Image 1 (cartoon, helix red, strand yellow):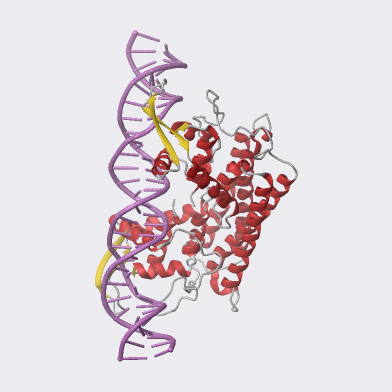
Image 2 (cartoon, chains in turn cyan, yellow, purple, orange):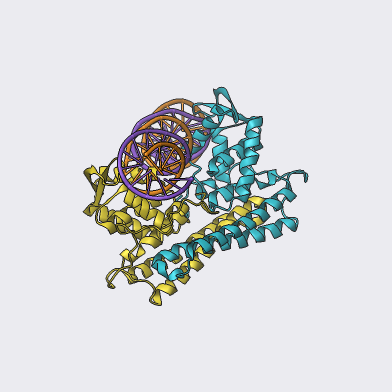
Length: 213
Length: 213
DNA sequence: AAGCATCTAGTCAAGTTTGACTAATATTCC
DNA sequence: GGAATATTAGTCAAACTTGACTAGATGCTT
């Protein structure tokens, strides 16, 4: 799974109706250009593709007041909402170690209920544990790990990553169980997108170390 | 940078001359189908593309003795070797957190000298530290991290990943400094590819948890 | 007031990745 | 000995990603 669809669906959904540039700005606000492949081309492509697939509804609109080409506004459909929730649940549970997907899931998790998120994260920890067990058994035959030479460091690295990932998830579970954040059905939600006219505190022109992907 | 070019160049280089299927098998031997996008399509594509760019030399050969279509053998060129070493050095130093790239670098690191690898890994740790500092300063303005709500967990997650990555790298540095593994110029190298006729202990048809990417 | 940059909104070609498919020989199993 | 399966070697279309580019309106500056 790639993170872009989840991100785009999440952004459109929070707005109710949004055009590409708005989505692009939201993702920048979330820092997604730093930890995912949320570049303009990918975003517009995802919007068009998902519109073609019936997950979004496209409305052509008049050229905006502020220059630039005419824009297309998108609304999420029922099928899109279903897909969104499916991707979101997957992103929080998946044992496979794609950081951009988990990050996207974290950004959207409050669209689910607190208890459900706790369940999904617990499932994540469990699945990572299983993966770990399978890998160590499979790649640690009787000869011992030494037979791999330096190649063994690759496995070593992945196991270490899995362990840190599980530890971190456990920490998040405790923060959420302790009452952090506002989830679906718990009243006034946190505003995670830029409302009309609000300027993006992170959209600067300055480069800083860490901007390279 | 994607890991596939580094992996393919590394495999061809170790063989001296190799056809696509051989490369494919090496990468499976390294487990690359589990932690990178080393699928047949990507491998053959990379071979063709790099041949087009002069990094590899393609030789058409007669159909193999063992069925299947005629195969193309590849040799690495001087430009290819340069590119390989450049990619390899980058993969070990890059602060950006792409695990498949680092994994590929680990698999190939012994093509460099021990001291150089130690230097590159130290540089990696340093760069991660800088990235961390820049990010915390940039995304932690006077209002404190609370203003981000749950979105802050994304940053939290990336910082945690960076820290674990740095710690692990430090561990690897110590193992290497302690004499582990055989690097370039240290005598008989570890054989990291499958020699003709050797069967691949990891090429099974069985699925096991962890095989999904 | 001319010139330069920036913001708005998006397109496009080239390159990459994916997953399914082809097609021949070899081996295994009943 | 015939059918099913595996192995060898690779192709291909569709989808996705990337980075550069377009083009009008506005703002900033010297």
